[in-house]
Image (tube, one colour):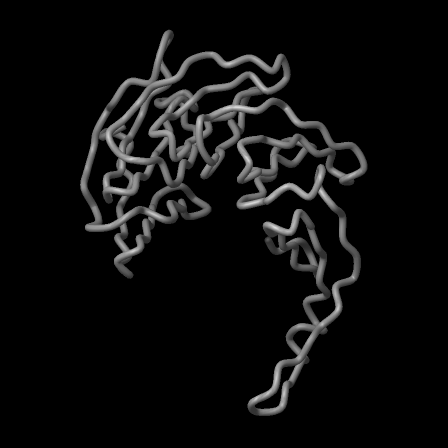
Length: 212
């Protein structure tokens, strides 16, 4: 994650580390040799959580722990709290609402779950065919009300889901890839979407408001 003049990284060693951008760019290892760049500082999350993703929210961070937890961390990383343990398997990804205290998680137990992370309450859960890999919140607009998410699965399917009153509702489903979807990213203006997968393919989509 790029943060000003620093790069933030997080890994399965449980550490969040900050690196100086200029030091990294100026590093010139000799051919055939590795060049070790020291980090500026680091923070250990939990009891050495196995972090697979780090998501920035409103004055907080959410860290996805491979052990089946979500960690809520203050903006300055001084306060940490395990929201709760959940999913029967690994938590693969998390998306935080840009408008309310809600997160959606996706796991290898083939489920997506909606959570109120302030009250530590699961709102609802839905099971799917295929293990979950990645989830992304669709940029909110007046039309979609900030209630659309995209979910990618190990079978290459991408589902557009609406946060209904009692469960996730499928708006559309598309088998974009032959292998598991690894990433879903929107452009800053929310008009484009790119997906990438384990089959080394990229798909670019135009986001049409009428289709939402």
